[in-house]
Length: 359
Image (cartoon, rainbow, N blue to C red; front, side, top):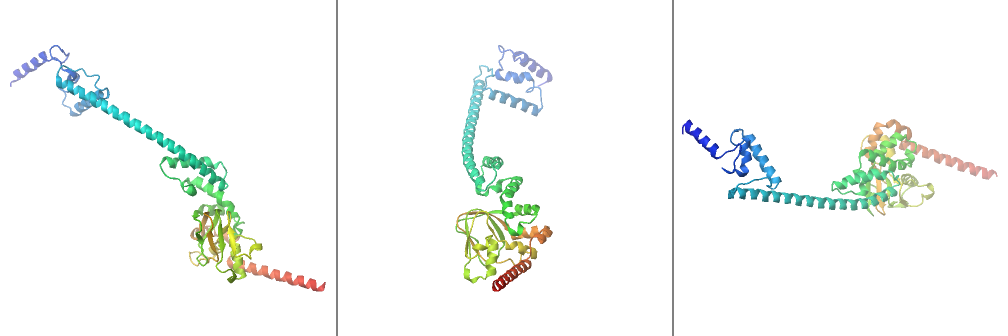
């Protein structure tokens, strides 16, 4: 076809199929008139431009359910417009259905979270009261518990310290453990900063009912501070121990001399055992030659406690040796002190007998 014939063909199409402006009485382009008038379909050769224009046209008509489409009388064009309206309606119903499902799940989750929070709040209040903590701690604990529950993670109140931020954990451990450390005779004159360091190295432990916490004859590799529950401390053969063994046991159990005749001791909240480790830590720099436990300690009920492991204690002593050297006597010093006290008792006894004879 020559250029002349092509020009005549274009003029003929333009005359009988006018686009700008369109004339529906001559030829009705229907829903395609807008695309032809834009010039993107016929004049442009830029594919991205054509694609974006067509994509926007489809999105616009799907979102409006085809309400803006002005069709001609051509049957397949009307079928195409009907399919656009149906597809748009189905997509809208699908969106509404998903939105409704999401709202139902969100409502159910919110109700479930509210019920869990009520239960956890009661457990936390009991835990705070049981451990003698100030009620002001409840708000920060509840906030963290709520955050964990929103993540669909279970919260074990017995191991509550494990989910708290480090600052809150340090503060609560200080409130729980500092008074316990001050009751240890070998730590009662220790500087506060050292007691704070020991507090941060204490680890929460839980012993089930009727379980051994320490066995007689086993290496004593930890100190244990009881915060809740009851345990029994006893020896396998009470008569086989000499007076010095009883003295060591009584010192570890923090009991008075008036009760030393009993071979069974009841340990409760605020009691501790394993104090021999403090003296051992001064004379050892490695995990060797642990002191041997001279008692059995067995839980009577479920026992919640804090433990100070031997390796943590050694690290603390190494870094702060000057404080421990000044405040904690070695085994030899304690023995010398005990001998001196016995000698003093003998002197007093002989003096009393001498006075009675002269009378």
